[in-house]
Image (cartoon, rainbow, N blue to C red; front, top):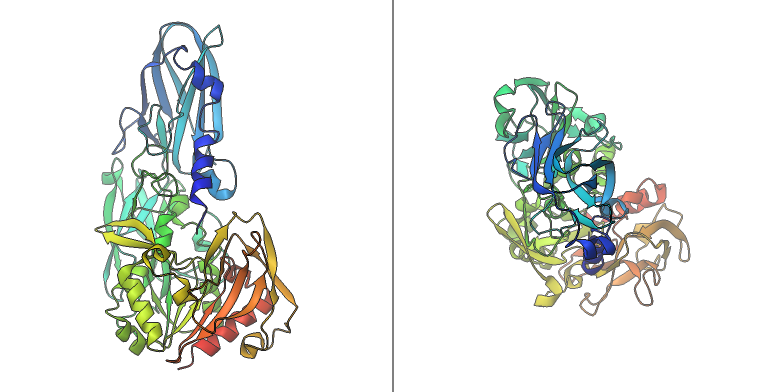
Length: 536
């Protein structure tokens, strides 16, 4: 998802996590907190002077310091990533204030069970009797912290790969301090899961396995849990539950033993999942993503996902489509971005598949993957893009890191030349509007059975949108449009084009298109597109 980098960074820089202007001006004269440090009842791997881990076992973080003179000290636990939910960055989830005499002191934070596992900045404001203040914890993302950071530990789980073939051993990297674990693998089901527990939506494919974890209570460990079974290609997740009620998930894809087991491939946007992973692996209180600060030029694709292991917007977009596939009995080969890059060449992809579908937000694409998909299209392969802002930015893999590079359009490969449309803009969903049908006669097969005719409206779309550009293939037709959605000339366009080689390419033009499949008309549109494009 494209979020408007300048606006995002400006909000982060000015948000509540930064000290007020008056406090910054008074910093040089306010009371100092000497020897500032943080600790928990027992350190976890990576803990240091300004980083402490708490959990049901470690209970609380204690922040120590020394005052040279009496002062009032306010300590706030600040969560730094809440802009993702449309709220200001820097939400304070807890606070305490004490009037303290000169000397050594400790303040403690014992997080409530409702506090979401992640890191929190403990912002400290010291104010003397004359109102002079000094603030610790107003550092910007990418800068060394000057205040304690507390890691509220849940269950961090990650697979070592994005996908596996049946029979291949799978390892889990697990970080938690529980004594005992229960590990189970689920196949993603059909309905919307609960926020913190995907098992409400999963079909178990293994029995739960009890694991003694006492040897790893103070540092992450590796666990070989299974050899991927002879299950159908699809989306799976490993659930790791603890004896004290915590749980974490690691999604992975079971790919086919060979390309072309089925004639349709569905590529899940695993690169984008990690770009939007705000997991704070380095413990500085900020998510390690280039969406947080320009200091981050790469993301570690082996990190566990924040929010119980569920990738950002995973449930809203990707899973709505996967649920539809399962519900309607569609037989497909599931691939990750890594699998797409390893496909060999576009010729091999074309021999294997009549249709390659991208249901999610395929924003970050390597040169090799772009070449493969473009060659596939040039050989007559059909493409279906059901979100927006696809093939937007070039990335490269450097070991376990995904490195951000230029926009594809800035290196002469405007994404509209492949997708049919290009990224137009984003406003975080502030303006949304229905699509209006304008090309029913151009593609009667798409609107068959929907009851939609030219002039009819359906859905409510926005957040991020695409539209045609000068690079769009000749003959690209607009089938539905939300006119001037993000300003004059900035419309969302659902488009379709064909090539002389016989390729058929449909692009939804709105990032939340597939999320609207609860509307029977939209579900029928997707089903019609599927039938039309999956034909040889």
